[in-house]
Image 1 (cartoon, rainbow, N blue to C red):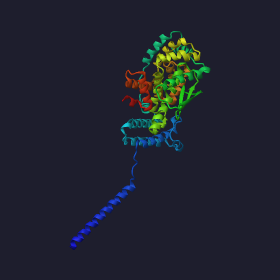
Image 2: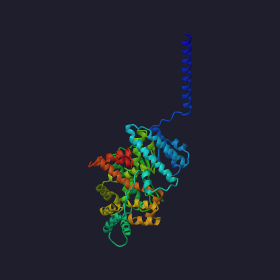
Image 3: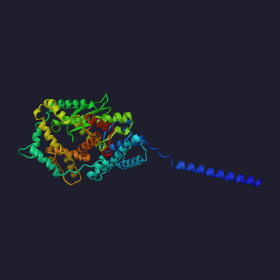
Image 4: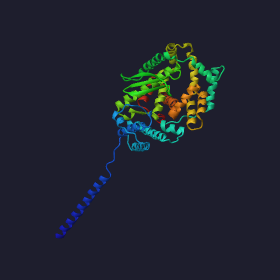
Length: 440
């Protein structure tokens, strides 16, 4: 009996010691490795916004619009680029471990692609030499198709036939277009008429917030012709640069591109549908040099033709804008026949930008090539090179962006009605996709 009691006591002592060891081990584990943060799309989105704000300290134009929490911007401190790059890579890695709900998979994909662009932009700010196509792929999720001088020469030959006469083709084109400059004292009247019509047409198909509005300013000394500064709460400041003559077709182009259904509508739709309704805070900040811009610029260009189909545009120009500008309305068809040919030269910008930024040609040669293939004046070509120097591969967003949006809408609508085209287009503005996402 005594032996049995002794054995039981021994077993109890051993069990108690083992339990104490396990508790000590658990306590040591807890103290040396605290619980890891559990990331969700919401926590990643907040980190993303604060990261973009941080990168914005290194480039004055990086943040194109912000209407998130004011305190995040006020509390942000400038950090070294190397630290920001580490943060970008860490957030990207954290995002890969997040399991997104089925209805938010596009949200996760969008964040991943945007983070990739941030990393590349930081490397550019660090002075890294990156080739044009590598830059455009990482920043804008797309590479511009190659266009050759031979292809562009074929278009020049057609224009040469369309506008015969003495002097170089550049001189003839610019002399022809000079007849269609909007007089500066009539510019506001013409532009307001264009943007009012664009707004009316857009509101037939897109439900805009009641408080949406804009202000127009006329400015100088810029490398761009027009700009939309979205202020949040469905309000935009639209600026037009009057450094150079503004031709009559630019009234509708700028009214639609900067306003309706372009940048103003795009930003307002994101704010309304994604930030206000869904609480997706990442859309409250717009990093300019990112895949978001390919859709922004591409949809703004594509939206011109959605709002103003060719025949309707010609009629509005003939009946309203040409008379307001004091121009000869009988020349509408011929003018737009020339403009249609000039539009086929749009990829000349990309060709020149790539060669210039990759160091294959010097600045003087780049200006000469723009004069030859974009058929712009020397002064306008010089301004365009200034834009390329400032914004680099951003130039692909206008032409390639427009083509990719057009292909996406065409694929989704088939031979659908004009109303169906507006519907798909509006859905794309309300739920943005990058180039690779549109291709799926």
